[in-house]
Length: 338
Ligand code: ZN
Image 1 (cartoon, rainbow, N blue to C red):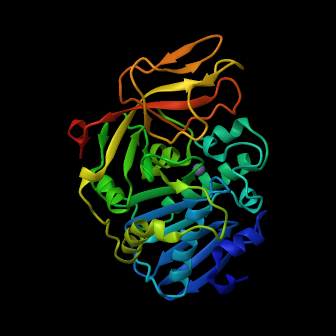
Image 2: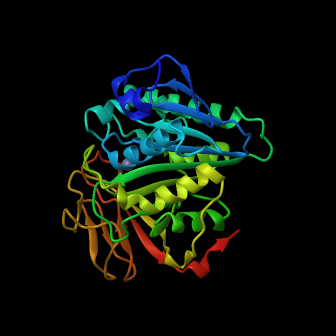
C-alpha cells in the first residue's frame, strides 16, 4: 500500500471501514498508517512535542479536513519539513462519505469511555480513536518532558458573532494557559468559551486522561467538500505550519480574545420545550435581562443579566439532552493565567 498522490484524505475515504497498517517514508521522517483515518508521522529528529490534529469528528465538517490534508500532503512531499511528532485523525470517514454529521450517534459525545453505553459505528470509532491517542502519547522517548497538544478542529452548524472560537476544557483550578491562548489568538481565534464541567468530548478526553493542552476549535460555517475557501483559515494554517516546522507556538496579544464562561445548560425537559429565538440566530448573540429564552410546560428560563449570550442552540434532540448553553462575558483581567 501507499498514499497515492500523498492524498491521505482520498485514501481514508476510499477505505472507510478499515485499512491494513503500512509504513510510508517521507523526506523528514517516517509515517505509519495505523488504520483508516489514522496517520502517525515521526520526524527523523527526536522531538518532545507531540501534536494530535483531529478533523471530521463530525463527518460533514469538511473545511478543517481539507486544511489538514493539505498540510499532510506538504509534509509527505517535503514542502514542510516535519520537526515534531504528529498524529492525524480523520474522525468519522463513514459519515464524511455520506456528507452527514454522524450515522447513529454524535461521535463527539462518546469519549472518556462513554462509547461503552452505545452500539454502532461511532461507538467503535470512539474506542479506536482513544486508543490511537493513547498509543501516540506513549510511543515516545521523551516521556518526562513531553509537550502534549491536541487541537480538535470543527466547523459549526450556524453562524457566529465570533466566527472562530474554541471551547477550553473544564479545568478544576480555573488556571488557564497563557501560551496556548496566545497561540489561539495568533491562529485567528476570536473567542474562548470556558467549560463549566467535565464532558465526553474528544478534546476533554485528551486533557483529562493524558494531561494534554486540548481544545475544541470551531472555525466557521459548514460547507461541502470542494466548496471551502481555505484562505479563511490562513492564520491557523500559518501558525500550524510554524509549529510543524519549528516546534514553536506562534504568539499574539490576548487582547483580541473575547472570553465567556458558561452560566447554565439549557436542558430540554419536555416535548413542549421551545427556545424564543429565530432559527438562524448566531452563536454568541446577546440578550436583555428578563427575556424569556426557553419555555416548556415544565419550566421557563429568563435571561439573568443583559449581555448574557446563547451558544449551540438546538432543540431537535431527545428529552434530557442539552438544548443550548447560556454564557457570560468575562474580562481577560479576571482570568488566572499561568
Ligand atoms: Zn463539529
